[in-house]
Image (cartoon, rainbow, N blue to C red):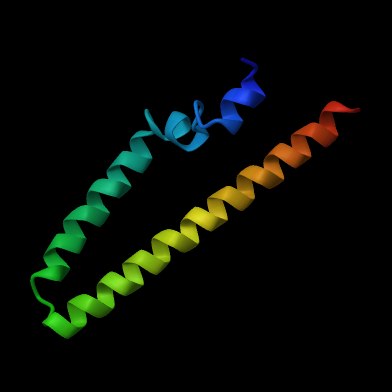
Length: 83
């Protein structure tokens, strides 16, 4: 199976590959989790629900942004390879 086919079928996950050993990312993830935990215990039920909606929407927005950046990078790489 070619690299492109593996990518298509989900056998290769670029985000997981480049973040697996990224110390900066892991540290930021730890900080986010710690602060989220601290924040959640201070919220009322209504605030917690609103915060969860915000958090979910932010994650979805980041996912869309990452996918678009990947697609643009792939497009740019294929155009550059023609030169």
